[in-house]
Figure 1 (tube, rainbow, N blue to C red):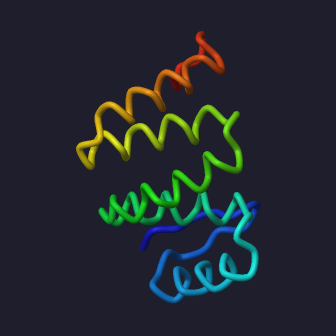
Figure 2: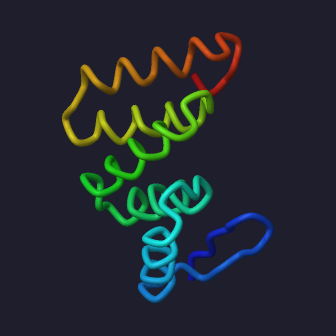
Length: 102
């Protein structure tokens, strides 16, 4: 069973949890922690087109978080949007050129 952490709490990843997160995001659409969780959940579940939407939302809210930009770029590259992926990776690297992430 896969476990996902939101804040300091770990949850078993399941369809019910995904439904709960979607419902919470409908009420609180700028909740970056839940958007991040959903993006990563969809990414790991192989639903990359959906994941891109959530990574885009996340970067729109927290554009200065290097990990978000890197993950957005990774997801974009996997759905065949190489030019956009490169832009995301370049933005990620520009935040901290010495980082191992970017």
